[in-house]
Length: 78
Image 1 (cartoon, rainbow, N blue to C red):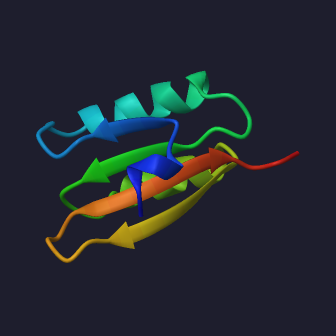
Image 2 (image 1 turned 135 degrees about the horizontal axis):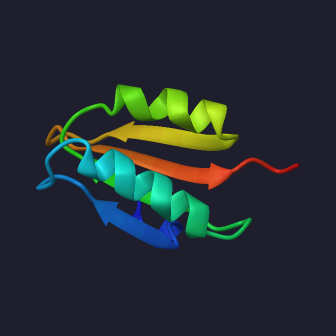
């Protein structure tokens, strides 16, 4: 996945939980339809997926060779 595909990037690799989760939800409230948010973390953010589903957000997850997980998110079309 590429940072170029995202309008906003949150690098949560150095953050303590639940900071990446909270920042992601705040950023999703701020992005406009058609924009994308990229979260970069050091492990699979399983609790986030349920929150995304409940809030009508689509996502694509990529596992990088170095163990980093990238989650690209956008609001579903209505």
